[in-house]
Image (cartoon, rainbow, N blue to C red; front, side, top):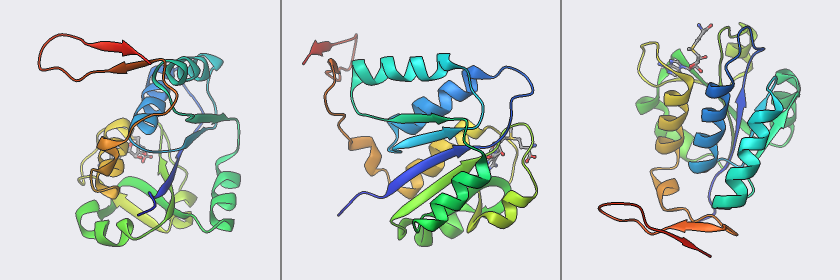
Amino acid sequence: MTPMSIRVLRLGQRYVRDDRTLTHLCLVSRAMGAECIYLEDAEKDVTATLEEVNRTWGGDFQAVLGRPWREVIREAKREGRHVIHLTMYGMPIQEAIVQLRELDKVLLVVGGPKVPGKMYHEADFNVAVTSQPHSEVAALAIALHEIQSGEELKRAFEKSKLRILPSPRGKKVVEN
Ligand SMILES: C[S@@+](CC[C@H](N)C(=O)[O-])C[C@H]1O[C@@H](n2cnc3c(N)ncnc32)[C@H](O)[C@@H]1O
């Protein structure tokens, strides 16, 4: 079965520096099966970290900076990508999951400090990971895991410099 094509969009301008959150969104997206993340506003440090992670651990995950969110959504819809907005006000993920797993191309949207009201109407699905406030990083990780039925956990990353040999104790890393 062809894996679902997943892209991620992080909404919002930065009111305070939160490059650590942005970096975590990038790392979670990369590790858990997305092909790229769109960040409206981020420091170059975020992309530099990601390039280093790709060089060391493989794959070609991309962070795309500076594209306005409405343009990203328009383009996603043009290419037949379904837009899933993660929000605590949405429908519980466990009720939507059967439908979401049938999609072949998705744009997963997470908010920042302030989510524009229009986003709720632009989305094909507004989905909640519990109806409680928490974090965009946690919501994204759980949504990626649920949508791919856990298949992302088995994924191998190509062209890595280093590879971990999973070990019950200690750290085992080999060069490729
Ligand atoms: C820290 S929250 C702030 C949300 C903001 N107060 C607003 O206007 O909605 C940042 C993002 O985390 C995600 N998030 C937080 N709790 C969530 C939940 N229970 N389910 C799904 N996503 C959630 C959403 O994408 C949200 O936009």
